[in-house]
Length: 584
Image 1 (cartoon, rainbow, N blue to C red):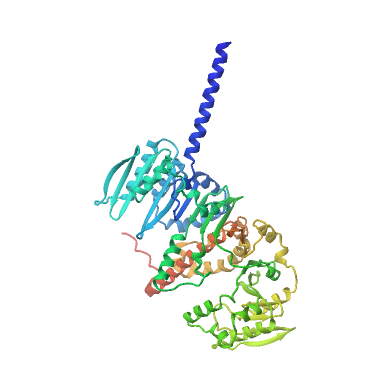
Image 2: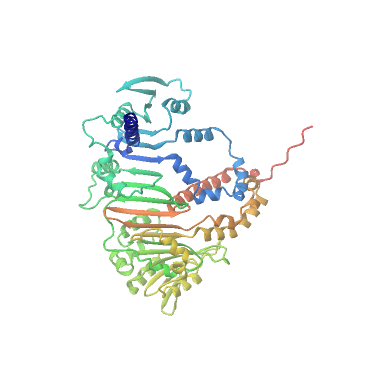
């Protein structure tokens, strides 16, 4: 009986020791990345778990759309023109094998215009297995460089591998389960000191910085990627530059970057959607003003875009005038010539700018509206007339209907017929691309609700984010895609028939049906609020508003490059290429 009791006691002690060791090792191996970095770190990007992020990505709406057989069939031809290589696939498999956790890269300083970078990640498995993979990456990175010098540096029980080829330096070291790299040996040594808990004081770590702590207070717990930027270094350099040229700002003034305390952003997946959160720590710019979204009453069931933001143009009158003068236009100079001041603008208009875009199924192109609340009709009329008089190329016609003033002009003939129109009532100013849409919007402005605000799609999307105080955006991506498909599909079919370059890149006949695409598309919604110590901007959708902006910028750059190439190419490049003669 005693032997059984002793055996049970020994097993309990062993189990407790194993549990304690496991939890202690987990605590060390999952140490906060911010605990490894110095307090003056300028930038850090962090991914807590690569494999988890990859798994969640494969369940999101965009990936499900990409996996549709019809989409894969359409992409087969353009992807066949991309050079195939197994290197990328092999690297992805190796990353999955390492299962990196707490992967990070950070900019710790910029001394004498010499940026110092550090990075690292926790790996799965043994150090030997990790070395086989990482050594292959390192050999690819350094290449066959004859000027490369390799050396080993021993430091506190760690072996630091240093590769130098002026001015490039790469120092790497293992501290299982961590792998670290840096562009400076002392920076890597400091990283190892923090990882091994060496040093007299823990205060000189990023995790104890007030700005960083404020940033992570707005970071969700289930994020898959995060970045933090401390603009203090850049603002100090800007202040030194201004002092050097003798430009001293008045008390309380300064550039926007000098007012920023930190910038942070995170991304997570939320029920198949991508959810971004950006935080900008700075004093509040607006005083006692909140977004009302009153212009939503102009929306219809065909509205695919709605924006509302606080934009005090009166306070920016001088800046806009300088920018217009630099661009060679007199549009804002006309206000000064007419004796209209910034105060007049503030008294004439409210500061909530609205914008809506409708696309009825019978129209080839969408219609766009821009709105401003009217506070003083008389002053608003004088401002509008002064701005229109600055347009010396075309005369604007003025009419009045039911107490509303309409200003319009006929633009020169183009691919899309445009008749710019401005309507001014005692409540609102509405500018649009044609008189019909503007007049209909004026009629809807008298109502408190609209087809858009009452639609379940809009309501469900708006509820996903906090109520905005500064900015709000809504994009019905399903409606937008269905209209684009109806308008552009015939054009692509025609282009493929007459332009060989188009037919060689894509097969428009295999464009996936619109219903296949739109079932994976939900609205993109974005909201910005001021939360105690800074602005918090959130966006959620199949892609976020920020990602959409980046995608549009990339596509625009490709389009510009394509137009430039077409100008450079000789005319014969547009002729069909003759078929090669058969080989005898």
